[in-house]
Image 1 (tube, protein in one colour):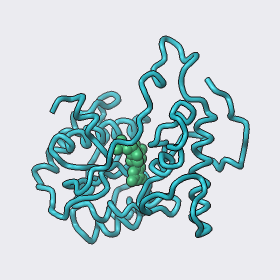
Image 2: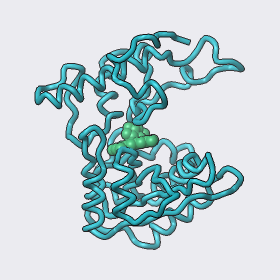
Image 3: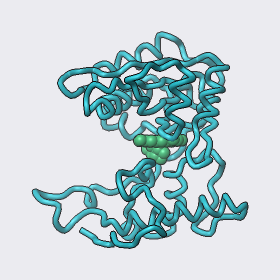
Length: 253
Ligand SMILES: Cc1cc2nc3c(=O)[nH]c(=O)nc-3n(C[C@H](O)[C@H](O)[C@H](O)COP(=O)(O)O)c2cc1C
């Protein structure tokens, strides 16, 4: 497949056919992973391919963030658990680049994948006997797609390209803040057992926060609400706080 097509065709697939994925294909995914770049070529990655239904079930039970569960972890025929050896500051970055190789290779093979970053680190490490000195940056569910969702909104090039300096373009923190407020509103609405006011209700419990944000924001023009729909699940620093906590980040670039 043409590479430009391939990158656009990859989707986060959360519904899979029951049929197993051939072992040779799973190995091919890891083969793609090992050709990823890594800082100082340290290749700090290990990959656990989980196909055992009972282990997958338990893995699925650990895969949740803020009480939102990801049933596709249990349901996928295979889950690739990425382990990063903490010998380098960049171990996590290296592993995410390897993860992208896996997902693109999978797309090329007609497989669907979904990167899952929302899970209990300790529970996954204990479940899979991952030794000290390793972290788990993420899991990748793998299977033949039963349903490929349409592409979510992606921010336009004109919005994300800056020339020479950052000045005059880009998303301001205020947009991030609005997005997080929308997200918290949905989460609090759900916790209180009433429908969310911030936007349309998500289709299923399985939708990630990013998808919820996409739904909550889609009624506004993209230029105004320029946060990507796949809003960071673990945003750095102070973005990962409740929006009521502070109000000092309203600067727009
Ligand atoms: C770091 C990271 C963490 C993610 N965590 C989850 C997750 O926990 N559960 C999930 O269902 N999707 C997760 N996703 C998938 C995103 O929701 C998805 O990439 C986004 O909505 C954009 O859709 P697309 O991948 O089809 O382009 C994650 C993606 C990334 C990059």
